[in-house]
Length: 460
Image (cartoon, helix red, strand yellow):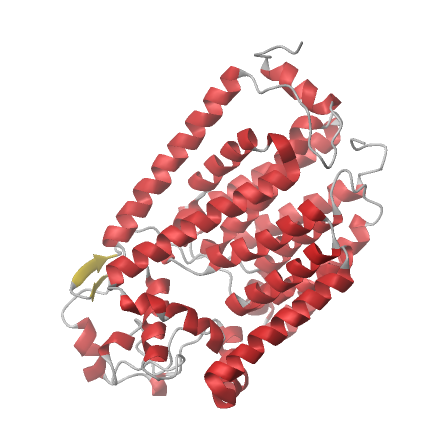
């Protein structure tokens, strides 16, 4: 009979001895002390994130969602979602002082926000925030399950605790961006592919990537990685998903709106989401209608005053390609095409021969898709960097279970890189190199782990 309350050392040794199967793993139950520590860690993180969420919902403008909210009114009232229609309708104002709006997603995506316009802003952003939070929790639970299988519950609390303390998670909620929804859609696709391993599941993965692309266009940077797994059903699912979504967009919005988006609006993404030039600024009279005598940090929406002056900076850059383009004075579009292809080519090279029992090829696709997308996207704010939490279950499991000291050291470095991405570093705000540096270091050490692997080295 197994010890009902093994020591932490005994529990870790049990992890090393047990064999991993698709059906699940049978390991020693976690020791009581470790359970208590992890539950305290989880609960403290939950209190931290809940406190911030309540404060932000009550007092923060959550500016990205306000862009979406005003876009919903623009679509509902028959205006272009890519113009600042504040002169036509007060409800369509989206913080911008330019004629262009801050919305740069496809026309079909703009329609997702029309239902929110039937609620007052305070209620709408509460619903949206709860949706984001639920998607983040569900995504982390799924990412933990595919690694730990039947004993995922205890590790999930540890990973969720880290996610709650992760500062980019707070920033995501502060901005109320769509990245939380995109992360959920991508993760559910990979969960299905890893869990069922059938062609239909990989087809569903492709469809999920298509949906995520319409939510966040740089999800396309995942696509070179399909050749790591069953690429034919994945590609079929992706193409079918794109065809259905684009056909729906043409049917709902017409050819002219879609043509305007792809021919004229889409290019602004490669210009740091530039809203417009000086000659496209709205008149001072129009701006004064909304700004009035309030300071820049205070906004009034639906008669409610929101003040973001007490919030920490959440705009720190996480995009490596953006930083390279600015420092090397090279076209960002050129860097964006070359860099992800190079990183994927290196991933294919380093991952060859890696034992599937150690790292499933579909998970390789998932993990490197996250890292390469974050590093290479034209516009990665810190608010999106909580995606790297998806790697933590796999990194922690191998750090605990492997006996090779060198590999254990590499995994420990990976944990440190993830933690460094998750803490606010005021000294580096305004510096675009901090977050891309740790993203690249995390990628490089996982490459090193893959090249150090041999089929005999990993659990059978």
